[in-house]
Image 1 (cartoon, rainbow, N blue to C red):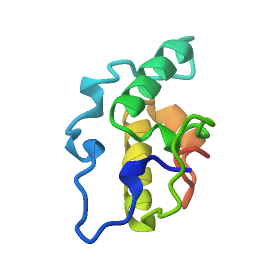
Image 2 (image 1 turned 90 degrees about the vertical axis):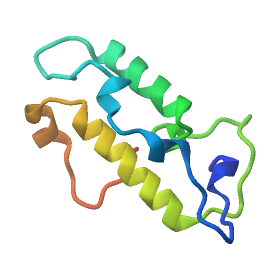
Image 3 (image 1 turned 180 degrees about the vertical axis):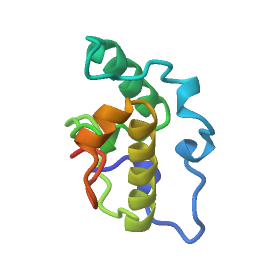
Image 4 (image 1 turned 120 degrees about the vertical axis):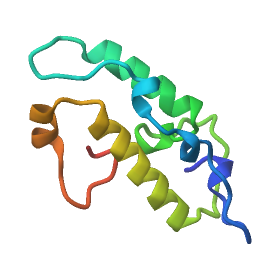
Length: 109
């Protein structure tokens, strides 16, 4: 399920995630293979995703989330690409080489 902001409309909506010019302003840590900081990085990243209403691209929706039967697939794909860019921008090059996968979704990354 997706949040109500994903509903298809006649006019393309401005989603809060579109306004993020630099994810590093919100997630200052760079996740690295050698450093044990995953929990801190994950908390910052997921909190930012929630703040910008894209956490559904990372975690399964809870039963408390409103149903959204009318998902705009183009908007969902665009937001998923943004979340993947955020992930890639906040991890080390070594880790990036390990997790990058063509045509994957943010959740699978």
